[in-house]
Image (spheres, rainbow, N blue to C red):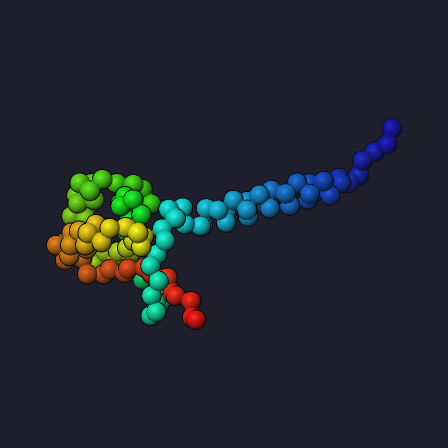
Length: 130
């Protein structure tokens, strides 16, 4: 009977490479914006860099005027109550689809300003140079 002194690791390496490829492909889908918000274009857009000491709260308005808080759909009543729980030091990032009604955007800003929330960032995308 033949004795096995070493293990053939080549099939194991093949399996690990396939698993790595699967993880990398699914990770790219997770990172991509899942709400599909079409941001308006501006000429003077700057890169958004979050502050080191806080995690921002994200508010999104899609083209159907549905409000999302941290990518979770919410009612206007819940959003109103949630905004009241925020501190004045909280950073807030707002993404509004360019097809959303302006009135919904103004209502959101008004509610934030009522609570003296001043650390607002409104995300846009840079327009391409002609």
